[in-house]
Length: 198
Length: 67
Image 1 (spheres, chains in turn yellow, purple):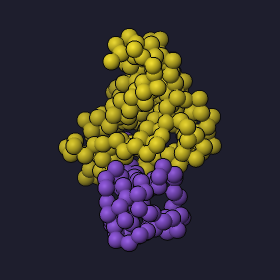
Image 2 (cartoon, rainbow over the protein chains, first blue to last red):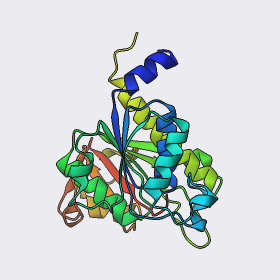
Image 3 (cartoon, chains in turn cyan, brown):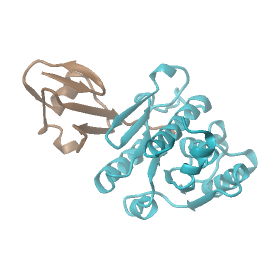
């Protein structure tokens, strides 16, 4: 096993894209910055709302801010030297390549299933060589043993694949936190599998 | 035929089935899906024309909202 210094030195040369800065994206970004990823490219068009604070990496005094601006502020408090490229824009087939084609790994961190499918299909078709880490199924609480990673070539899908968000099954901090950190862990695993440490 | 479905071994009657037939047998009635047969992406309009054979690796990944 490489030591933490070797890991962060290697990861500091890597670029990771994060599509969406909600519950998945904001928490995944925090884990990646703490792990020393060289550069994050983060895109989201939303603003911080009170309902986000039950699971997203934002604070009460950031309500109303653009999520990407608030996230940059928070990530820079963890690591003032972090390289962050933020885009206050909605991710669509028109801009995915512009945003993420330079990335070593891309993280799907949307809320909406249509958006998830759009990004997955676009990346598999246009950028099949860039590993894509996605998430599906993390609403509610409990059923931790159902949380898995399904791997298909360069696509990794984290979650239970069935717990959809609804009025009776709200997204909550612990499970969203687990899956967003699963995504970050898979990113690090993918990157380090290509490293020649030790 | 024996295939791998979502990382698990599964056995079906017959020598080949379409992806639509497998979804019917398994009661997969999901709206948003990513389907990959031997790591190749299969689009929605190809589910009923793409056949799965013995030894194939099929992934039917359900995409649900939340994040």
